[in-house]
Image (cartoon, rainbow, N blue to C red; front, top):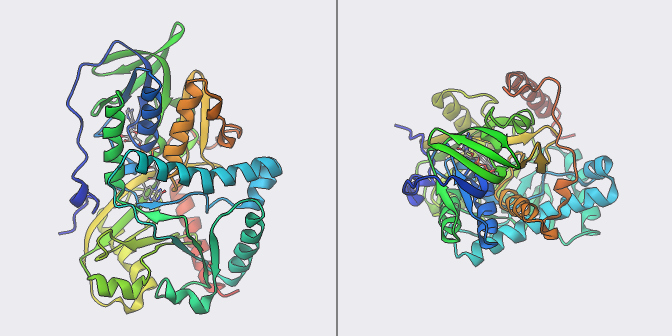
Length: 431
Ligand SMILES: Cc1cc2nc3c(=O)[nH]c(=O)nc-3n(C[C@H](O)[C@H](O)[C@H](O)COP(=O)(O)OP(=O)(O)OC[C@H]3O[C@@H](n4cnc5c(N)ncnc54)[C@H](O)[C@@H]3O)c2cc1C
């Protein structure tokens, strides 16, 4: 039987709610959502002496933060040319610098300072490039990026890619040396304890049903009562509820599916991924895969579908993708197959700011292990009125689209489009 629990829980334990406490009638700040964004924000606010209540509709860490692929390192998905085209030279470079450098430094520093045991490994990340054109573009992009920041990345030509991943599927790749691996469930469970240790009240199983103006404050409604809050931070990313109307129309909840193989053994894993790196790829299908922290299993995630599908379908599709990447793998079983929701913004850029009195930090577009703590921290600093809260991610408009009324009815159509692009790019792969 395939388990639908994330493999990570075997080591980290199933996310559970801290002991129930009565909700206070008032708090300086209420944070909605106990993932990496909300918990990091709570830590910063509580350390500054604010009374903070973090509410989650389920167990803290049950969202994307506890079930993701565990790859850490940001910014590699933002293209310098595109960012400069949209936000000007200074804006574009600032966004990429913060995503590539500052967010990774921040997340690593947080883990070190708070001594969070989350199997952090400095593995580096290999990004497989789908065709020669992408390889050449990426090499040019890297050259330009290096003029502005020390990205610590290198191109890997196709004849050397097997040193990192035993497949001929890619036309070469790029390695980001600052990226790494962790067990995400341990990271977020550690952050629950950190936020509590610094004085935040973290409560699970408490869905926020409405946020209403209440004089100069906001009233946060739950079925356990109402908390009057000086400030409210929405930290719900791919799980943003209808009650947070502004963000609900700006975040597209995209399901991502992950499977873990049975134990294949360290030797077999080393044959597939010799240096134990995190592997991602540039094709629209976008698979990401890695060895498990103990180096014995292959863990692969991907867009098995763009809408919720039965576990059996997702497992079948992920197994097919593993065989496509590693035809030599031989027989194996999938023991774990799970899913979570990543929060995509319409412009694929994370956003932090305030609208109608409610703060938000979200839209990490599948890359939140560094960006979520980083922007959670920045949002908290902005709430505190600290100029250190300044970030390029607060200077961009958080767009919606006319067709986005909240429910992502358009995802099945996007799925068809991505599948068609996938077929097309397979046909013209080597160009
Ligand atoms: C399958 C998958 C794989 C991924 N892989 C990677 C990866 O390898 N590397 C990487 O960097 N990023 C990855 N990501 C993205 C990353 O997980 C997210 O960007 C990040 O966890 C977002 O953190 P967050 O705290 O903003 O949101 P979440 O961790 O999703 O937390 C949001 C919380 O809001 C709560 N909530 C929702 N509604 C309410 C309500 N009404 N009241 C109270 N609480 C509410 C939810 O219960 C949830 O706990 C992946 C995402 C998924 C889904």
